[in-house]
Length: 313
Ligand SMILES: Cc1cc2nc3c(=O)[nH]c(=O)nc-3n(C[C@H](O)[C@H](O)[C@H](O)COP(=O)(O)OP(=O)(O)OC[C@H]3O[C@@H](n4cnc5c(N)ncnc54)[C@H](O)[C@@H]3O)c2cc1C
Image (cartoon, rainbow, N blue to C red; front, side, top):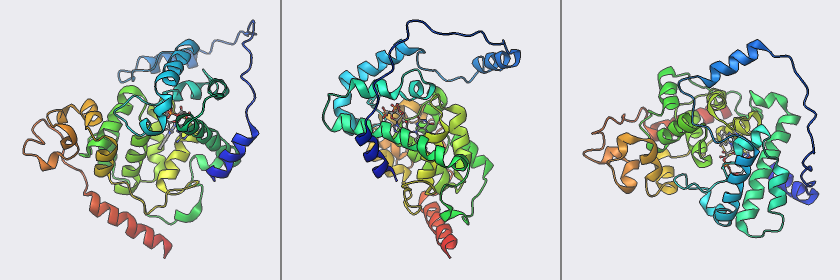
């Protein structure tokens, strides 16, 4: 359970960041030709996303601009994918470019809901690492067996439409295209796209988790796979399986201006404001090649609930 973990984590406190060493004990390693070739191939892949600038200095620049400009409003801003209101520290944290202790030390004297919420998000990262440490099998198997009898599908065409951002659900497609372009996706949209794959397409969560890990610059087995399990209803603090995100109303609620959708889905740029979330309600909605919905959300929601009921029986 996250809440008791986070409480204990806060009470325990954190050591100060390690001091910067005067020199580094750098050892020569064998030049592994296979590893170098694999790296070269990966870096010359035609569909490589645009990655954030590398290195500790770049990470700290980004961190300080977030801390000074956005941390105060983080509690509200963090839910709006159209706004650049989160820290974007995740790739740096994942790769060890900055340590969470550095960030925690820099906000130690700050108070307010923004900074409290931010600390809690770092606690989620620690929590999932801890869950994985104690349950290594949960990386690729359901943490809780409650849904072990669930029937899943493998609809290859629909999975491909999801991966490439062509499901016909605007906020889902915007998120999946952001992932391909930036190697990052906004947290709210990670939840919506994960819910779509698991509840609307009835696909077992590891299929989606694998794709995210392939594409995310912050791809982390603990945070990613347990984030997926949270959405799928098989993990810790699981959102109950019967809670199925509505991809249209979620889009309208968290992207009320429609700006996020228009940024990532050019075929919908001619629709103003919220209209971008419902092209089917506008005469010219499909005038620029946007695909029609691949499934009917209301019907698939019911199907997900029926499968859950069958599992319980
Ligand atoms: C399906 C799904 C998959 C995810 N996959 C990953 C992943 O592979 N790697 C990853 O780092 N995060 C993952 N997350 C968590 C979260 O989406 C990202 O950490 C966050 O979007 C990164 O952006 P940020 O750095 O601007 O976050 P901020 O909002 O600025 O948060 C600060 C830091 O707190 C941590 N954090 C925030 N939210 C979470 C969370 N829910 N779980 C764990 N840590 C969190 C991250 O280290 C993040 O950098 C996933 C969430 C979901 C729902």
